[in-house]
Amino acid sequence: MAEVFEINHPAEGKLDVVFLHGLDGDARGSWTAGGPDMFWPRWLADDLETAAVWSVGYDARSSGWRGRSMSVADRSVNLLALLQNHDIGTRPLILVAHSMGGLIAKEMLLLAAEGRTEHAPFAAAARGVVFLSTPHNGSGLTRAVDALSHLYRGTPAVADLRRNGAYLRHLNDRYRDWVDDSGVANLVFFESRPTLGRRVVDEASANPGIARVRPIGVDADHIDICKPVSRRALVYGQVLRFIRRCADGPGPAPVRVDGANYGSIVIGDGNTVGPW
Image (tube, rainbow, N blue to C red; front, top):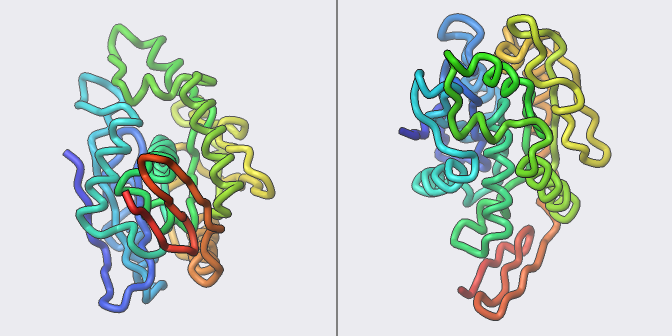
């Protein structure tokens, strides 16, 4: 079951920061390096007084023996509806995503931007996306699943991660085009250390190929890259600066979509959606 957990929601909040975990993650453990005082979404809530901070939890098991999951596309629609229930997407929005959570972030934004549905404001609200070891071109994880198939039954979520699969290539091509049009900012990190003897998402897979965005290497493995140990850590400092820059800067450039059945949608600073 998917849930949205409120970390902080100030009365005068001016933006939303939403955390999306990856495979086998959860809304709190994925972002905690040690004890409860090392949950860094809480640090952001303290350091960004006008930000509402949320963490999303959802079923995303890498093995059918451990639990259930949806495909990336189905989960994206599911989470768009869930976030809408909390009015997330009605003001400036930053997404912070680890691993497969980054694929869900991209799919949600593209469904909102391209779908001509009531979710269109979600894409219009987006100001920035943080990717932490997201496999934009696939992940070596599925090779391990294949090798251990007699013990480790893959789920639909894992099937989406096959390296250089058509789904991932097309998703990333669409996302790059949308970023070019919308001007949404991106911050990208990749792991530099192996997890259980192998790099899960290497430099090439972690790079979405967005112009003027240089992926940043982190001295961590795939699990710990999203668990900064202090406010002095590279990931925390860069994410904090990125959010402040996105919040203070202009919104995305307007993108107009016309359709005979839908009227006009102006996505971006125009803040006009519809008529339907």
